[in-house]
Image 1 (cartoon, rainbow, N blue to C red):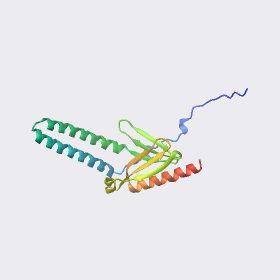
Image 2: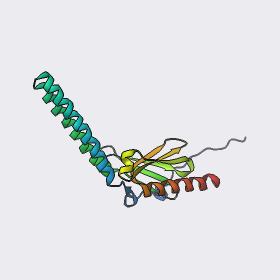
Image 3: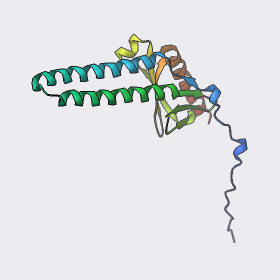
Image 4: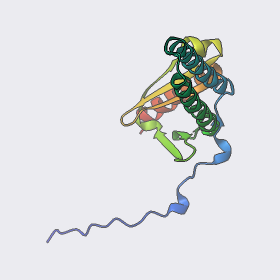
Length: 171
């Protein structure tokens, strides 16, 4: 008759390797300083605009609006502190993972076999603080990890390229 029975038995999850929280690497502390400098610049611009508008209008409403916007900038800075302290990455034998989020926690894992390219970028502020961002492109979602010191960024990029190349040559 030639009919074959099709089945998909459940996978035993006890045998699947788990991510180990102890092996996640946190971002360089300088990245938090860079983020706070960005928030301070925004706050300075808000105060300057508020002062100019208040002087021109001569009314209390611009002062109130400036205070509200400054409070929002302060909340954004506080959120950045919490977010940046949570962000971390981990390299395992077959993949690289990225953890982020405070309220909504996310872990992205990218198998080396799907990785096509990895590069490092450094803007002027990142260069000043010795930081870099690693961009990993894959056949699927891409992954970017900012706030790495330059040595870690280069090591991560090199490992990703090496492991992806090995696995793509010998699947």
